[in-house]
Image (tube, rainbow, N blue to C red):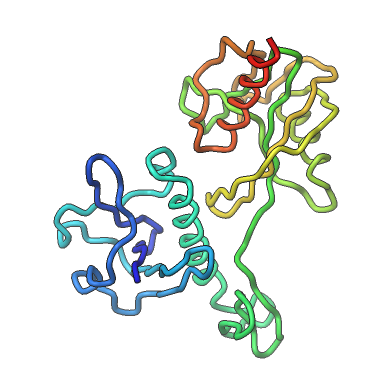
Length: 261
């Protein structure tokens, strides 16, 4: 059996070999670490035969020659999608265990359920599941053009799709239309679902869409969204990598336009 090792701040133990990060380790490595009171969780069917071990302190790189601690976000491009999803699941499960040690209603200590992936309160009989926040993300198109925006968290030259959280009482299509209007001031119609991606920052499930522009002028708030522009499919700015759902949506749009020519 192998394990993923993370620290109290959710940084991941990694070893680089030929520029590729190795994040799945033998349990023998734990003998070189302070694993006192470490949290150990099986990753279940999704994680195959792996466990995640969370240390109750920082990873001491000096005690492990050749190993470093890295953030999950830094591995987006360099890891295969399956390994990235496994790491995301590991961190989400550790966050869930850490943040739900006590019942939010009565303050009682929670216990692991014997029947499903939940923490339960023996007093209230409430169950607490790993937190997943549904979000919408998508591309607004107008013929050969697409609308891309640069957010305050993006690298200076990078433009991406629009995204946001689904609010109470909304379906995903309503949420996407609202987010587009709020972020760039344009209306959309003919909203179509594409695909999804788990996004563990900290626990989103991204639902991808494409929609047609139906009216309005671009207007950004200058805070969350700094710039937004129309771009022809063959004159795109720097966009997110293929490993992200935003990068995949944009590249699929370009391929469809190229095929239509």
